[in-house]
Length: 551
Image 1 (cartoon, rainbow, N blue to C red):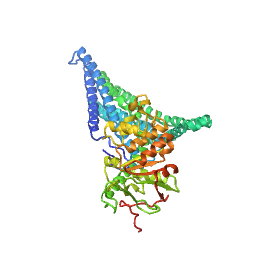
Image 2 (image 1 turned 120 degrees about the vertical axis):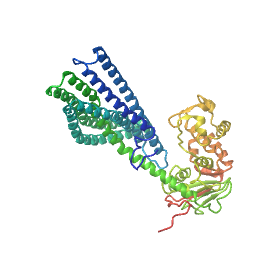
Image 3 (image 1 turned 90 degrees about the vertical axis):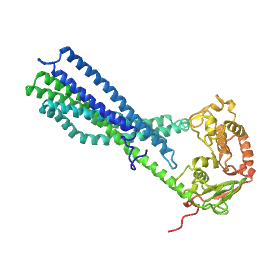
Image 4 (image 1 turned 90 degrees about the horizontal axis):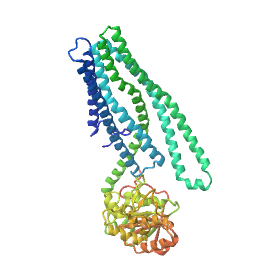
């Protein structure tokens, strides 16, 4: 289930969460009913009551225990509601980072999935939950007091009205300070991520103290803004406590001034006391609400941007699906790549199985960008992925499983997901058997028997405990696994030792499909590659692989 509108988080009252919200409302009504029962039991203590004193006391104790049980269930239900909602939002955030075109900084991603999601959870589980249970309890208590005596109801509600009036400007101030604090935390998280990522260079340049000074400065800003925010938060929380106390005292004073029976006054005070807990919580709820709004102001646009990129990607796939097969692109093993500015033959690049093609450009990153777009890593214009045909199939239109089978990519500096080495190899083609996987590892010369747990060794932190050479071999193994018709290799030889480069040369020379590569002149000469040069500033393409017509 996705957000109903751009910039909005998923609705809380939706799906299975409806049951939890309605359950919280029922728990609040139950607590109000128990308060009424306790009040009625207290009135039986006065002279002439129809119930024995022992029975009245037992009833009050039983009601108190039941009330405590309902409070426990309320907390559990509220936590379930909050966790379910955060799980939904967390999945959307991770999906946003896995959507082609994402450029979010790692530090920002960490801040969003930790601090911001904590703010969301606090609001849902400790804000929405207590509200769903507390409002029926407060309203029920006001009704009971009004039934006992209308002035008791008015006295109980008056402090709440004053609290509601002052909370409006206080809440606005709390929101503004929460936004400032959130931005400071985001900047600190970004700096920490950058510092940790550049740790080796910092240590080598003896810059540890300097960077720690920058972290201290960012931390001081967070501390100052957190303390500044605590002032208004303390005021809001104090407002709830004062309102609860004044409501109970007002009920007691009115009971005395009205000359009500002491047992009735005591019962009214009991009802007001039971309702004091959600009243005290109002200050905390308002605080959580403003912190949530500050987080939503960041999370909402991020999710909306991901939704926009997904829409563009799906629209591109739909357009590519309807594009006719270009001349010469049909047939097994044939590759057709439309790239404006390609020389010497111009666009498109056509190749058949066994071809070895080297891409060059005045822009060193241009060949890698092309390869990334071919495998769907970049959905932003120009959409070169829409103009790549393998065996007569448009890579921009095929299903992901089919696309994985048609093309493999191995790049320098490969980073791997967390999990066993065997899973990392089979990640692109999980449909193939384990025996094939072991054969491919032997082909690339990856000595898994030297690893702690062999092919079951768990890779962490992007590929540890593998060396740079071993990671390059694993990247190559993943790319050739299943022998895709189109193999892309980007500067991989730079990460390999001499034996690995020799093995790479032999493997590429005998590869049955089309190989498109970048790398050393020595590798290109040994393979007898045909060279194509990329224009560093290609124009956007239509899904058919042709430049768009001028307006």
